Length: 320
Image 1 (tube, rainbow, N blue to C red):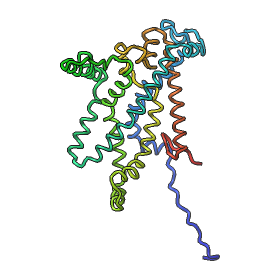
Image 2: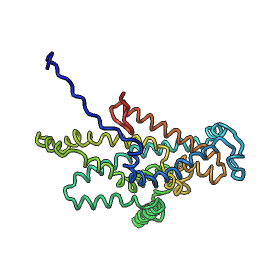
Image 3: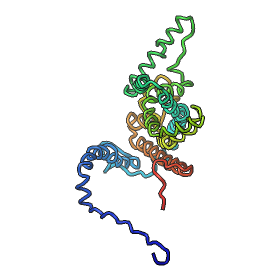
Image 4: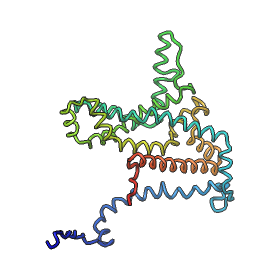
């Protein structure tokens, strides 16, 4: 070539397809999406419009159109309500218990299952672990009541041994522990599946190379397994932080009378008793809307923090 240089070959760009041709190409996939999109619209997005009653003195017999507009007054009254403040801080307290003691359990279970050599034992362990997920909270609470209630199996056994019964299900001080135990028994096995899928994506050649270099099981787990699971751990942690104000409705409302509102009152139960039972529709909507806004801000902040540590989080940071 003259001048000793080499001309760069231009890559031939694939011809862009028109919108109509792409629509024709993906017609079957788009048709498969229609039921899911319709479900989201009907039961998630359209009901969002009903949050307008949070800014009204809503009266059901007048409807949204004729109810009096009060602006931010419902939120001012809400944040000045000591019952709401108590429910808010109690929600954060119980959510902290769940985050610290519940979140690591599925990861530990996944590591245990992945280390099992026998495929049959692994399948049996998986089936036993995630079977309680398919039980309703009514059955779960009934099961714990039969085992740990005042007339349950454990307390009857203590009476037979001449010991005093222990109020496992009615003690407000130990209620956070009971809540975490119930959630671990019900949902830890199901959440384990996500970590098992992430473990399956780690290249086995990394383990073989580390074993050839003399790395033991603990070193392989620390330097290969956990770094391979880090993106999934960060993603699930962000989602859990965003959902931190939703500690559970059915689980708490079923046990609210047993331990008292002081221990079991959370934002979800406060919204139910204020809006539905008490007829304060606008106050209940304001509490729900405030909870949703705070959850969205928590997700955004946690995702930004993940970007600072070099993780993608829920969505990757845009590179210009």
